[in-house]
Structure formats: structure tokens, C-alpha cells
Image (cartoon, rainbow, N blue to C red; front, side, top):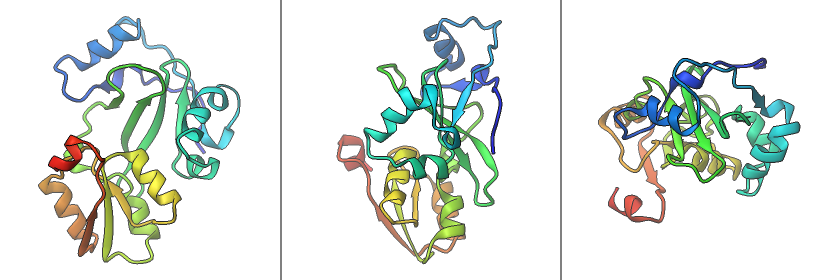
Length: 193
């Protein structure tokens, strides 16, 4: 399993901002010269800070302890975000999604250098666990995919937004999916997709 402190404060960027690292650092009252160890509490050790803040955040949204552990979801009290790993189809970690548990903007942060249009969250589970690879359910966000997976549909992937890219379509074809079900959010962005 994963253990120990992580030094991740300097790898964040916010989608759609030009000076994303400065934006994040400024709003967290951390100077660019500091790089504190952000202690992440892992799903397999659901205790303490995670249980008090991160776990309640997820449980209140319908996620089970077993889903939190399965998807390696972590929480950092220091940066007030849950952290969700993004893996490729071989289960290698490509980066992380950070979701605030408070009323902070932006709600989502991504690992530096991550190209969302090339990513399908959950492709590793789709390739390794799906009973049938002919059909895939596409959702917008990683937590949407976790929730659908938890409900028993393990042929789900998230496009990390409301618009699917050519690169994502190509990846879906490469894993053999012939039928695609779009289950986007019930909002303007979801309708426009």
C-alpha cells in the first residue's frame, strides 16, 4: 500500500487558469518557496482526519468504505482535498485529481502536466474487470464513475469534463467498446455535450 508523507504542494494546477500554481498557492497561504509535506491519509487506514472530514464528505455523498479503499482515495487535512489517482489501462498512476471538501474555488485541481483530453478515468478497471467490454458508460467526473461502479456497473469511465475528445474516442475504440452510453450531468454543460 501507499504510506508516508507526500510533497505535492507544488504540482497543482487549476484547469482554465493561466497562473494556476500561483492561484493555488496564494489561496492556500503557502509561499512559492515552501514545500511542506502534505500528509495524506489513505483509504486503507480510514481513521483520524480522514474519518472526520474526508470520509464524512464521501459517505454523505453515498460512497462506501470499500469503494474508497478500492479506488485508493485519500485525504489531506493540510490542503483540504481528497485525492483520487488516475491510472492508465495498465494500472500505472498518471496523476491525481484533487477535490476540495470545502467551499473553495476551483473545486478540482489536477496534477501538473496532466492532459485531461487524453485521459479516461477508470480505464484500468474497465480493461481488467468489465464482464463485457463491448459497452461502456461514460460519465463526466471521477466521483461519478466511482459511484456508478459502486452501484454494480464496472464498465464505466469518466471523461473528466463535459466534452469528449478525439483522443478519448480513440482510446475507447482501442479497448474494444462498440456501444457507448453517455450519462452526463443534468446541467447546461451536460446537455450541451
